[in-house]
Image (cartoon, rainbow, N blue to C red; front, side, top):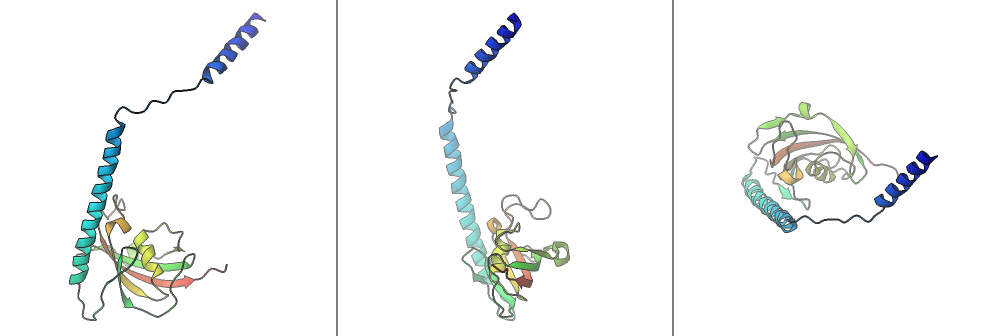
Length: 184
């Protein structure tokens, strides 16, 4: 009986002790953390702006025999249509099937259409790069387009952990094979 009372007393004391308000300590160096974040943001903005300027110069120099020119989009990519079928444009929640060939800006193939494979999904619910999804929104069934993707709309700071490195802008030939509008 004494053991039971001792056990209950210790348990009660432990519960009371654990319910005390804990004091939260701020890091001593919290100012330098905010400086680091600010500097990081400023660096990212400057890098993004420099990349946009570089890509705009690159796009302006592109000529082809058919006079297809790259047009900027509101999503930050450039697009030129190689083949346009004048079909309705894909919309949010539409199911799409597409292929792509991914190249560097110097036209070196990173992924062939076969390596990239045929992919499908619902627009707005993609696990694909933001740039490819943005391009698909501007296309209709059967369209073929070339996209210039800044690195921040492609594979960004980390690349694809395979053939595409960090901060690499890409040239992508995108073909939209099928679009099905979902019934709502």
